[in-house]
Image (cartoon, rainbow, N blue to C red; front, side, top):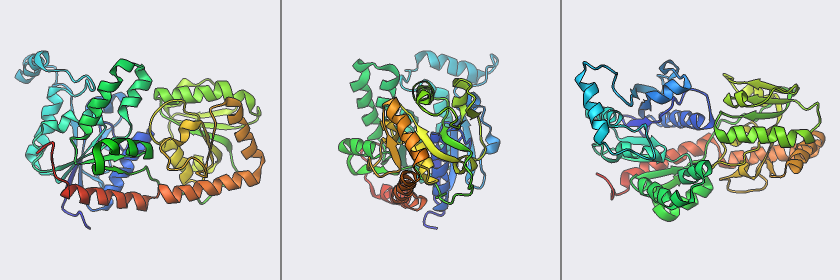
Length: 395
């Protein structure tokens, strides 16, 4: 294979094999596709994330990952240990990272040790706010790539609405991204935004899934399906749908909700909730429509792309198609008005010709934009081109 004998260190703070949320699913897909190019891949993560999500290293696929490094934010508490007191003293004088409180001196030193033991050809960092992890690290010639996932400045603005910090935070984000040899976006909108500032080093690699268009279940158990983690945007979205849209829908409508978001929604006779599903495939095949009632959030909604991979029509708010190259004929119907949102669902459920038309649009749009083949080709291009890009910001 083209990249055989090339070593890659993939930093993702969570366990990418956890099957928990869209961002995790994307990281897992990226690892599979990078492995298919012949790379030797090591994985680095952060212990605090693994603990908070209840993740285990045992789920990490050793057919994809050669070595795992779980980084700790602080040394074990042992008052007889010199290391404990050393980092306790350093903490008092260290400059705090305002964008990332988990990036401590102790974690940084553990990360640095990885490069003293092994030479890497590539380092992929997930999320811009981890940039300081590599800024002063001796990378021994490794090319560094950032997978942005989101436009972080806007994401933080949604959470805090602090207009006074908006300009400085965006300036920091652009400065961080300029440090890398390659900047990966997953949204067409963010690609255009960052390319204005960073030029040709920006490349868009949309999320991808295998095609699952073959309908294995003739009978549909659910009318609507929503998949979501328990992040604030998902919680807000599904509760808006239940409070505002559901009253306009027939009482007999059947809804399936999957993910940790289930812990934040009320009990309803027509809603089945599953906090965790080992395999989502059967649920997609048993559902008629996927919903994405997001009111806030940035970037492509991976839950929408996944639904399209099953040829499933999607009904959502306007946020559902964020980052898409086209806003119509993409398998999605959108409205921020709760009554219209409900009317779209009702029409699709009652009008077979409209349903089939949207289903065909979903499959066509998915094939043209989110295929695994196209994604692998883009990763190959990214790794190739990063070899010839001149370093101007780091050495």
